[in-house]
Image (spheres, rainbow, N blue to C red):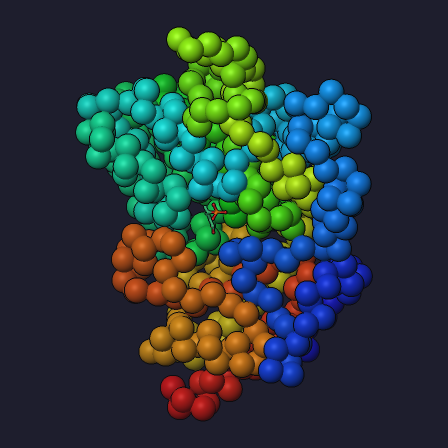
Length: 414
Ligand code: PLP
């Protein structure tokens, strides 16, 4: 039986997550699909309830106290996000729907204006489709070359190759901070430096890092940084794009409509200041309020402690899983450079079958290509099973998971 966490009080944290009380097929829910989305603590649910019961109004438009209060909540939420990722100014925080929209925003604004034939964009083979397809769409239209940094057998990026691929014609380097399949924590600071030395911009997909470890966009020196609220205890439908102010000021708007203009006539409009230039239409105030409460919750535990807890869980899970014969685990063994995501295959059982059998025991994992089909191809598989951890998971749950994997192996006589 695994011992309790040394760094955070999981038992107490679990009390804050009503959904964890649910049972499936008579078994307590073991939620190991945190890379897809996280569960929500009652503090976040309560903040959203309070918003609708007491504070709801459209922002920026009303000259009345309620609207001013809602506007304040929205702007305070941005200030909190800015502090959370150490942005210099809250005006550098643009709210989107999710990481996908944040990356598309840059592709369709900066990208469509600033790249042309002869330029290249450097990505990696481990990107989620949301950091691949927007660049493919741009590349098709603008005849720009896409280049991909490969991985080694352990799932680590080939930095020597990156140094060669990034050249004087590179306009952008866009990579994931943490792989949603391999768990690899990429050396983003080092890669950003290479990009900047060649005069390229640097975008980091922080969807899998921001919820799980301290993030400092200034230390990374990212020009753009994208993440999703729903993976870090916040509600769905709110995402963040951070961009350096001097760059965001140079690039044009994304969607046109209300709130993003300073003045407008039939012959044309002038654009609003940051961040409103990039936020057309009624904002997701509920999402901002929920994300703000989520950040408070994460801060109350401490991002260092969260990272330490997940590293401990991952090390424990990797050790125990590697005792199972015929298991293939993808990604680095060293948990110092690995987040709490473990992709694996067991014998020749299809990952979907594996996920269904685990589901019957109350264990929720993900199976499939994880929106990273090129990486599946690179690994020589069509799919993997994936368990991913968060603050409310503990070693006892991993023990149950391992017991079920062993049971499956025995039952199927692998
Ligand atoms: N990037 C990575 C690394 C992800 O893991 C995900 C989602 O799983 C995304 C981007 C897309 O996130 P969203 O669907 O919230 O836009």
